[in-house]
Length: 117
Image 1: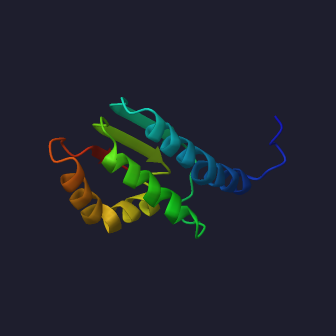
Image 2: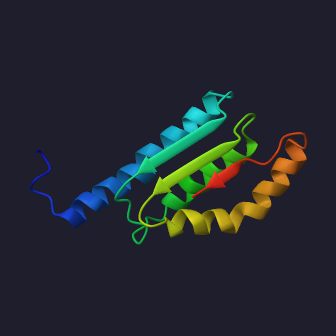
């Protein structure tokens, strides 16, 4: 095991950084380039929402923007952290009204996507 020299806390920090800096941008890019995705579920264990970097909020906000303007997405579930990821939840709560208003303006015919965090 190559990471056996890392403590559990160090492993959690590494996984958390990977989630925000690699996984979320990859999911955002995937949604932007695949307009026919309808359902998506992401599960990442050991994500620490207590420690967040300043640039992570922009990555999360950008993901939510793409989710709400996506042409076919009906449901996305993001399971990161235990029991819930309050950083992602709070970020969604803070921008939800703006996202919903934009969605209604740009895609009035399409139902809002279900976003479970």
